[in-house]
Amino acid sequence: MKIKFDGYAFRFGLLSWIIGLIVTIALVAACIPVNWFASMVADKTACKVMLLQPTGSIWQGSASFGFSEIKIGDFKTCNAPYGMTQHFSWSSQCSLMDLQCKWNIQHSNLARPLDLSLTMRGLSINANQAELPGNFLEGLGSPWNSLHPRGKLKLQWSDIKWDEAPTGLVEVQFLDITSPISLVKPLGSYALKLQIDQDIKVDLFTLNGPLLLNGRGLLANGRLSFQGEASALPESIDALIGLLSIIGRKDGTVYRLKM
Image (cartoon, rainbow, N blue to C red; front, top):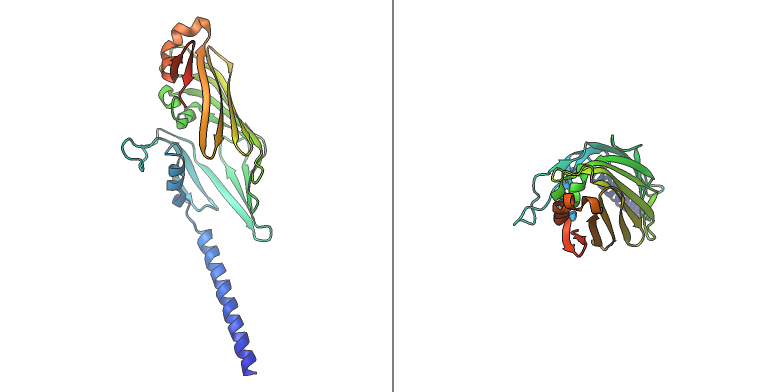
């Protein structure tokens, strides 16, 4: 009897230890502050995207995105952001039975709240669309941060799945783009399509306007290889020659995009 009691006591003690460990991990995970990820976002994007004014946890909170570049001479420090989005907020709900967490993200520029789901298989994002200010382009780096573009940006995407077989389509439209360094207004409207597969295929083309931009690229293993060119309608070449020289290197009748 005593032996059985000791055995049960041992098993109960082990079970209590396991339950206590699970509860501790759950409590720690539930309180992970989102500002822990600020430096990670800046590091992974080379300061092009920054997480600003983060509050709350990864499960419920708010933040803004900022856009900047690495400080010259210090590869670990970001310059002060030259642009930022409005605050967005999120809430989440997790199920241990399904091993799934769902986030609901709200932002004034979204057509509707964004639903994001994370499972053991991967990540999925529901179809949605959004509008952003033209200075969002500056976060993409050269040549946009030299042009200081203004205008409207429209984003729309299909259902996106990021798992063993990634799928999805993202289209970004840059409408009625202008630049303070050019007297030609507007410069034009453009579209960028991202076809998500094992790698991401990138297509840039002109919708309308005197400034012509076209190109193709591939985003693989975190690196973008892109070949594009810029030119102008014959009647606008003289007015856009200075802008074209900033955009890229002259090669015959076109200018090679610097990206």
